[in-house]
Length: 258
Image 1 (cartoon, rainbow, N blue to C red):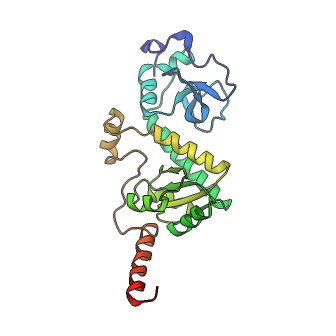
Image 2: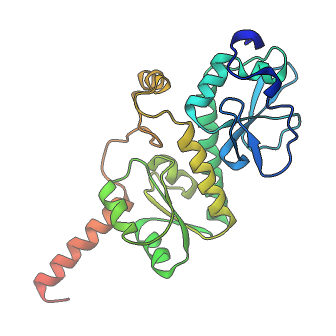
Image 3: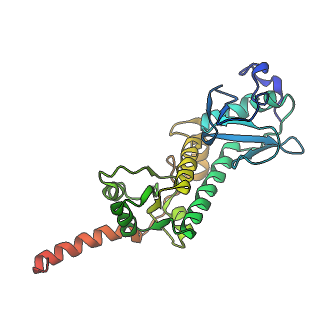
């Protein structure tokens, strides 16, 4: 339980619950910056004054907002920012930042599933390349633990937004695959939402060397920002495809078939 007098980081008269939740901007409890709400995390109080992250921004009650940054979330939980804003005691759940990270990962996976079912997403190196070449792709989602060389080769010099919020295993799940390294999303609202959630997720993952990263690394074996656990074994179909294609090209040239 955090009491409002725990720290004087934010003046009591400047608490974030006094401002009406109208318009596109919200003020962060910690940094006092006004930012687009899509780049922030909203919190509300539950019936027993427990703090609830409202990642969808739709729960009833007056909201408290933080920038989607790991250090800001850790400071707010540690220094009593929520209690000051709520003008009373607040039950802050343990591992708040980690819970938010897990929730955002789930939101990205759900949006990818929506895009697939709507025919607005394809997975695999060749399918993604076709969408990129045709200009249909408005966003490229790549696995954080995929081959950097193959990811760069697929993008080339194309001017398309690229995000890497999930591991290959996480990225493959919405497509019914064990792994996926490359997913193309057609331009539109879903692509914009996926990009926004990927940006929030990247923000709440601690940078290497941060205090929070040290704690998480000791518990989970270490992880780079935006990266899931490494999966040993053979490369997936996404990564094999370009190498197989190049091998066939070399064989064809040697046999005079190209």
